[in-house]
Length: 299
Length: 233
Image (cartoon, rainbow over all chains, first blue to last red; front, top):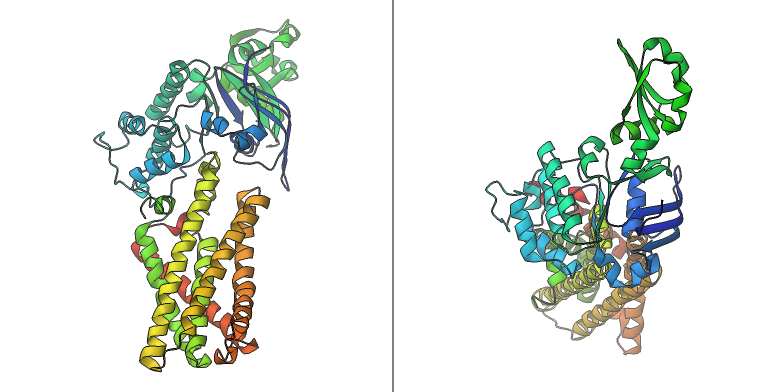
């Protein structure tokens, strides 16, 4: 399917001693929230770091916003100003105060809005009473609250693309829901904005995910808009008696005392003819797990 | 001053910098007592003290992140900004200036202690000598910056390059340059006495001793404050 891309890449490669990232083609749609899914060690963080310009020791070509190359990213201040990035963990040093974080971010980014940062700080309830506590040290904040501080900071910049590495992981369920709201608001506040995030919390992030990229062993194994993936992959439920026959065409099978269920390609449904099976629309979580299981090396 | 040191202030913790400086002074004092006694002449003492201060400051900073630029996670944040590395580099240079000021203060302190209190025989060459070292080290800082900016593509390479160059500049570049300048300036280096092979040996011992003492003191003090400052680096 053709769509406008916020980032496109060709032949992206990064070699480690025991791992190789190899992505012949990468397309991230503009104007949508794209989830990067994969098991631990699949190469998600490496890919995100390459896209955010944190790693520059890779091979391949990247194009940002349809017109800037990765060389432009390092030579033209406009590109990185348009990209907001959050890493896997809080990256503020423990002795920094909230005001220090504010000062540092304003030093690093021209489009950082201090007033908006303070508003975000209050909206995200970073302090117990909701007020701005400039003198509070990062070391005094809980893990989840540190991530909130990172979010308050990155959302205080006028960017066109957010790249987030596992933003949901340290957050409680309520805050994950809030994160979804923040992403939706970010996307709708300004036309053409895009979000690209990695996640293990597919269930929690599914409601905000428009497009998914699934990685295994450094390679992209599936991509597509969630609605298209849900047409491509079907959840099948059937009698235990048919499980042996169905196994061959199912990506994954799980059983209970009532029968089995698994994911299969919609195009293979006719191969289940004659069996007593019902079909349902699969969730992104079920599809992702099925694809990961098919490609994993975990026994 | 406030504007000039903006980057430095943001990256460094004032309290920790004070602790580090005090620890450095303590370690320096102990080392100079030992090496100064061994080397004898006052100028030799200043030579050792200056070099110890500079080398330790640089090693401490670059290896252990005195200004905390080594934390890789935080570097991700810095790298995500177009001007992030420039901000860090500026902070590094500002830190180097602070080290320079610290070294000069300690050097002058040494002159006062040795020439005016211990020997009661002031020698003006001591001041010239301190200034020459200062300019040489400042040049090596800029040399580091130029080299790393040109060749180092990743942060680790950047840090490694600075680290190696600093060691090289501090241990090899500074003393010979100073000796040559002193000789060309007609200053009798015999006066320095120990700045020969023996001087180098004393120097290395002094550096190692001060370095170890400094690390022990810093670690002890910082653990005492339970700041977690070093844990992230």
